[in-house]
Length: 323
Image (cartoon, rainbow, N blue to C red; front, side, top):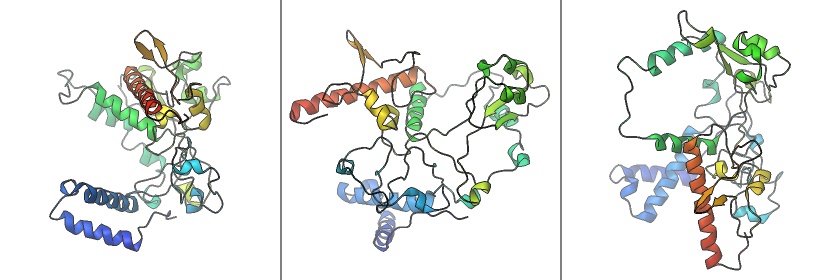
């Protein structure tokens, strides 16, 4: 059941141990710039070996250069929207549609039993640790909402698991019936028949007395070990590649570009202001627009404006370049 993981080469292990010794006396950020950069690179290699584990039972799922050669050389230096070829050795690694990796070996992350899942009750845990206590709101004086927006903005770049397509407002019985009745309703579209009905403790003030929670959709079983340790597909690219701005497929990326040869992103301009364009339902057109609020609007607009400003600078410096 042990999934494959990356292992450093002999030369990489030598440099890892060398920097371990150096860092006993000088931390990486106090080394001369070039040497410090090498130090950080070998820290990354060590972390990859010890803290990242494949979500598949076989490393073959990540692809190889023989079966999937790079046919377009531009991806040596340019981003492929779905993340393919970001790793030249493992072309499908962290692509959209691939399973998200883990920080622990799969043998330690097996699917819990029903008793393990509900003990202790997650609703009880949330009330004990997260509910506002008597005395009112306690402000976080060292942060503001921009910090929360920034964290969410980055998470949207990394992953979005498949889940049940489930809406409380799409069926009148949702407000009066149990979850089972909702799932059986013909006008509810869903990808999985597993929606958790979180047990509500007696006396809990939660409305209607039940709390349905759409479950993350497991990937198809590719190996017997997937039964005990399911994998979960990532709809986004797992790379730190700005996919929340540019999209995780070539079709989305192209739809967000203007027809201008400079490669700018679409913006709706009115006077001095510029805004993200909207689709027919009023949703913002960007790489990832779920869980939207004013914090996401600000950051996505800021990055789109910055992208277009860089395009203008490049056009001025290199007029012969195409977008």
